[in-house]
Amino acid sequence: MMQSVAVIGAGAVGLSAAVNVQQALPGVKVTIIADKFDEDTTSWGAGGMFRLDLDYHPKEEHRRVRSWATDSWNFYSNLAHSDQTEASGMSFVAGTLLYNVPKEHSYSVMSDLTFDFQMLNQDQLKKLNPRVSHKYGYSFSTLLTHTGTYLKWLMKQFLDLGGSVQCRTLSNISELQDDFDVVVNCCGLNAAQLCQDRHIYPVMGHLLKVKAPWIKKFFWSEEFYMFPHNNYILLGGIREKDNWSTVPDPAIRETILSRGRNLFPHLKDAPIIGEWVGLRPGRPSIRLELELLRSENKRALPVVHNYGHAGDGITLSWGCGVEAARLVKQVVTAATSRL
Ligand SMILES: Cc1cc2nc3c(=O)[nH]c(=O)nc-3n(C[C@H](O)[C@H](O)[C@H](O)COP(=O)(O)OP(=O)(O)OC[C@H]3O[C@@H](n4cnc5c(N)ncnc54)[C@H](O)[C@@H]3O)c2cc1C
Image (tube, rainbow, N blue to C red; front, side):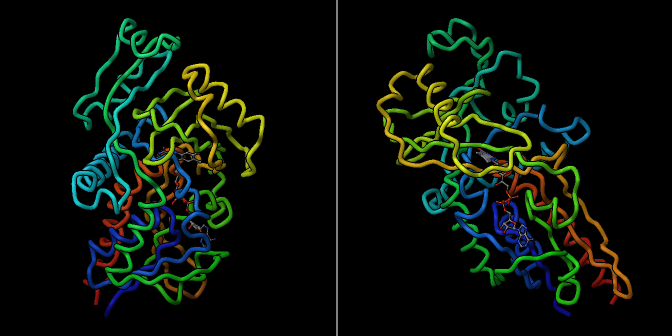
């Protein structure tokens, strides 16, 4: 009997899980169910930098996070080196990361994955930019995802592999009980409502899109960052826990601009061409696990939860999709062997 899998969510996490399930289980029918697509998702607006700071993940999760990051890195860097670079929105960019505390341990995944991770001394930092006052700097090349292009590319892969899509809002995962054998839940921040997860919270971020074609490298510090995409530069660095607002705040816009201009005075000549506010799905740790959802008089519905990626959702989405598909495969294989 052909099994059928529902994936809740059409952000980077849901699309990656859906394509991974299709690849791991070619005979299985996969349906994406979501109420937001493309520019209405958080994933669409994200900065798209591949960056992993282990300090943001509990120690007992480091092994799993490292493995998700490695699977993602291998997949994205293959894309960035292939004829799919443009279509998938994956490219490499070099740049610098600055802190006031040493971070080589928490960036050990990045130093292992990249070919050119280097710690900078004070002299090099001053040569880089005499305006920076940070004590520690690291330079490396990483992957930059043009998220809108990547989501479209993932959706095309999904449809080409025979997937189908339903646009609908779910009030409860058990609504899928009668129509699907397994569910992969990639609902992002909405886990607060959909599965009453009390651990999930928003971390508001605000990005400005500016024209500054002279900027070719990324710059990242906790207060201010900039990422050079093809036709624009993204400026950001705002992280406000428990702020649910998605309306651009002029005071925050000014904060980003003044932090940026203090470090890079020529940004005063960069016109603003876009602005976006998004909510990172914050959680003490990413929830990626199998649950058997029980309801009265019905069989238990296997649900693979995959949400709560906070500021790492683009970085980790492919690798988490690989693990989600592995869990789905275990369930499907066990069910088939019982027939
Ligand atoms: C300002 C900012 C900058 C960022 N920069 C980066 C970065 O540089 N690098 C990085 O790795 N990450 C970055 N992120 C984080 C990244 O954007 C998120 O971690 C990621 O987008 C989460 O993806 P997701 O698929 O879980 O959620 P989403 O993209 O929000 O998708 C959730 C999906 O679930 C569906 N859904 C939810 N509930 C229901 C329901 N009840 N019924 C039906 N459908 C439902 C929605 O319709 C949607 O399709 C940034 C985030 C912000 C806000």
